[in-house]
Amino acid sequence: MDDSSRLTKTKEQWARARRGGEEREVFYEGDARLPPGQHLVENFPVLDLGFKPNIPITEWTLTVGGFVTTPVTWSWEQFLAQPSFKDRSDFHCVTSWSRYDNDWEGVSFKHLISVVKPLSLAKFVLFKSYDDYTTNLPLEACNDDDVLLAHSWNGTPLSRDHGGPVRVIVPKRYAWKGAKWVKEIVLSDKDEKGFWEVRGYSNTALPWKNDRYG
Ligand SMILES: Nc1nc2c(c(=O)[nH]1)N[C@H]1C(S)=C(S)[C@@H](COP(=O)(O)O)O[C@H]1N2
Ligand SMILES: [Mo]
Image (tube, rainbow, N blue to C red; front, side):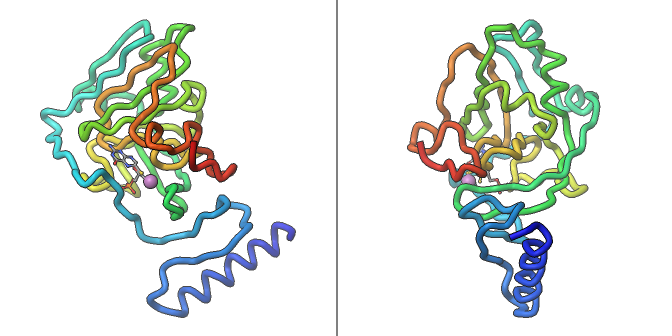
C-alpha cells in the first residue's frame, strides 16, 4: 500500500468509528503511524500500580545524580526556572492502546544533560518515582530531541492521574518507560532493570519492533 491509500484507509476507519457514535476505538493493521499490534484511542487511559501519590508542589523535589559532574536537586520553582520545552508526540502503551498528538511541555532531557554533565562512564539511566515505581533506559535513548520531563499536557498542568507534578515522556519507547510522579534520576555505568523490566517486560521496549516482552 502506498502512503496516500494508507491515509485514506485510516480516514475511512475514523469516519466509520465516528458515525457509530459511541465507538471510540479504531482497530486496523499496517498503518504508517500506528506501531504493530496497537489500536488507536481518543481518550487518555490511566495506568498505575493501584496507587497515585499526592505530592504538593511545596514538597516536590527532583534529584538527578549518580555518574554526573554536577548533581542537582530542584525545587518546583527551580524546575520551572529551567528553559521551557514543548513537543507533540504519540503515546504507545504496551497493553495495546496508542494516543496521537499529545502536546507536552516541560524541561527537555537534553537541557537536563547540559546541566548535570554526565561522566563519560555514564551509559544508563534509572528513573525512580514517588510511588516506588522504577524504569530504566540507555542514556542514549534519553538524549533525544523528543524526550522531556513534562509538567503540562495539552495546555493544562499535568493531573495527578497522569503523573503530575512531573512525569517523563519517551515517545520512541512504550509508555511504561516514562515514569509518572518522577522523583529521582540516577545515571550509572550499569543497567539496572526497573519494575516491569524485572517482571518479564522488554528491556528495550521498542513499539516499532513489537518488542514487548524480555
Ligand atoms: N510512577 C509510575 N509511572 C508509570 C506507571 C506507574 O505505574 N507508576 N505506569 C507506566 C505505564 S505501564 C504506562 S502505560 C504509563 C501510563 O501513563 P498514563 O496513566 O498517563 O496513561 O505510565 C507509565 N509510568
Ligand atoms: Mo503501560
